[in-house]
Amino acid sequence: MAMRSDPLSPEQRSWTMSRVRSADTRPELAVRRVVHALGYRYRLHDRKLPGRPDLVFRARHKVIFVHGCFWHAHQCRAGSKKPKANAEYWRAKLGRNRARDKRVLRELCLEGWSALVVWECELRDRLALESKLTSFLGARADATARAV
Image 1: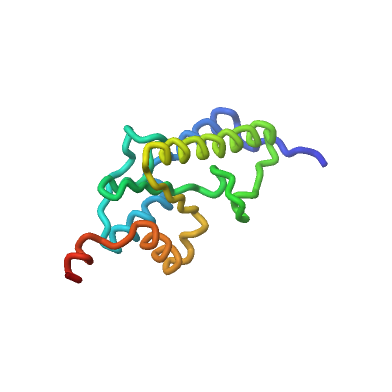
Image 2: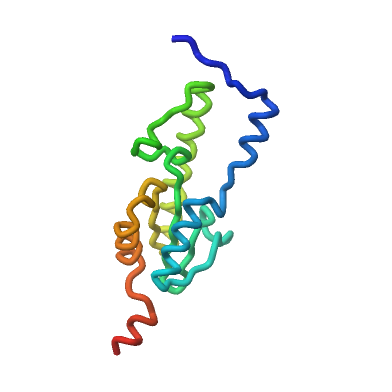
């Protein structure tokens, strides 16, 4: 099977890839809206923590990462797609991403933090996402105060 060459020039590909964001992505913003609507408050991208988690709940000692299925090689349909052009580069790149994710989660655990990974594909089912988030984060402070 013949490999298709990249239809973009190296300069065009470089410009396109430079537009890929690492923070404030659409999936991350969607999770932030859901978490906020559920009544939780958080900080963003704490540089002092391993991996700069997307959402940080200091008082709870919990963090949330929002991972894109492709970029973190999730086992879903979107994450299993592998580029055909420059396949060896992408195999190594996605492997490094997964290894870094494992290392960061281990470091956070050793520092006493609980971490949750929300995958981009999980955003399709809002009720399941809300359930996952509230299960991980526990009761809100204002909810427990009202119950007393």
